[in-house]
Length: 510
Image 1 (tube, one colour):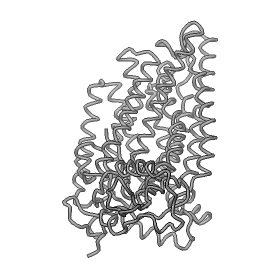
Image 2 (cartoon, rainbow, N blue to C red):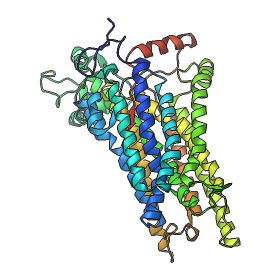
Image 3 (cartoon, one colour):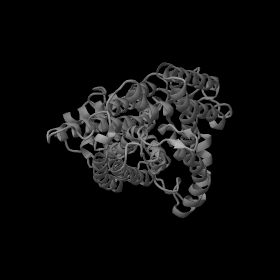
Image 4 (cartoon, helix red, strand yellow):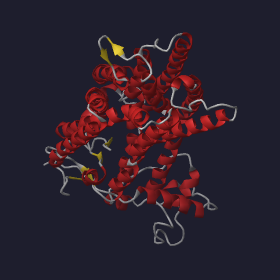
């Protein structure tokens, strides 16, 4: 019977690789992702209409409230991931918090994004229609029922899941390294790195990954210096090399995290304001009227098609050309999304300029077609195909085994941070522009009296600066795992990955 070290089933028994994990287990997860995003995406894209139309909020208030709602959804994944990595089995974490981390085979992230897009397609058509035509109470009830169905489907797959045994708090381990390194800041590092503390057997027994010492951030290496009584002083007197390296991994990802959060700002901005723009535009398509939130169906269909083509055709071709497992590096894929995000905001600004000119030069009955908003939505779809998957893969693969759940939750925390940055920028811009006399750029309840075009251009400028910073940090970043392998070894490695531990992913169900 094949087994995987450190992995157990939902009852705590050692897993059998013939029964647990693999494609069969991932099917339940993809069903959960699909059903949960029917609710998620439909609500997130249409909630601003509810706030502005039903709750009579102004432009800025509706935008900041919806952005804060999205941010709280994403950031809530952090405490759940902490418990999953530290104390609870991941299979139980979902029952309490509704984020879930499951071990699944590798091109999982592309198909995860496919399931998200499929859920978005259904949500943008069905949920938005119910909310607009049958009432928001009925819409929220449908969303709750769909998520409950997703949880039941997930629960049905519990006997097939693999779970990593919790290895203690990664946050505590990182704090220990920082504190001990500070206490030993005046000590000299030994000339022989082998003299640094590395209890291989103890770490392995605890389910922690054995990490080798790397160059850089040498000040943290001092936490592993053994003095006098050896390691008997406890965890707060000396740390293992693996602990030090785990801390280095986190610190090295911080610049990518911060610049990626800025890179996702236009996504939050465009999604929030485009729906409000659509509410004062011509929404007719022949004899029917289209909800502005439903326009996101267009890039969603594009995502569904391109993800299949990318996974089955583009990646193998790029893999042969570059020798990299994913065809391109994670940071390269993220960079493409960064450019698309910047382009979407610039296009949104140009469209808003055209809309304002039409309103100013025509009667109130002459309105611009809502389908002028399609290009910016399409570019947001490119962001999801590239940066969405790339960031998930980056944070998950670069995190150590002892903090995989937190690694994947960092991505969602980054999305939440981007939404909060959007909220703060709106408030700051309104305060600054009010001082010049009159209302702020985004004051009032009527976009025709606001300067959304100037706000879009401002975000585009911020995005350009952030992209330059991202290029610098991405160029200097050293991957923990070598992504370049021999072409003839790629298929063999993928087969091994599918048969072993797999990867971790965070699914936001809130």
